[in-house]
Length: 274
Image (tube, rainbow, N blue to C red; front, side):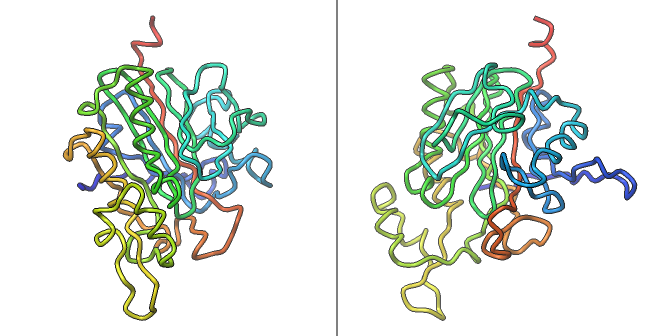
């Protein structure tokens, strides 16, 4: 897996309305897509959480995009993927979402920001520059074991005629394989879909018996290659949430309300003119 450059955007000390964020250069260099993730400076994002509504207002001003063009789902660590349409605009941001138990969202709508929230789980961005289709996936160990990224690619194919070899995928900031310690009980969960890859995904801990470091990013790469994505189109931002204090990590802080917002949007001027 190759690494992509990222660019950090921060406001001035006097600009209290600015939300710090990183842009993903490998995706944004295509010219008609915006792909971002936020820092730990503003960490309240889930609907109903104290400070979330204000943060979304600030992000709207920072990006120059109406909150009514943001959307998200109620994530529950599933492998379910949903197509988001214009009528989903604002869900989970300015009003409660009706889209529950979905951890992956797909659209071909222009100017619709697909949002997800993570704090060690893997955010996965998808972009098909040929069909102008995007997806945003929240892939924790449960979603990874159940191959949610495969489901996202299938939806892109079935609903929008995307071809796997055209799709670009980027894994965002998450707990890296050197930090993500799990118990041996997770092996059986992964054996269902990764039977031949267990030895490379579960690295035994030297200090503790029956403890392993789990390589979620490699598991996701295995799934993507199975779907037909080209290895040269699979990237990682190569940032660990546990190691970086500028990102949100449940394992590091134990906070249940602090998350990174990860998001992607098509911003095709040609579509606007049609």
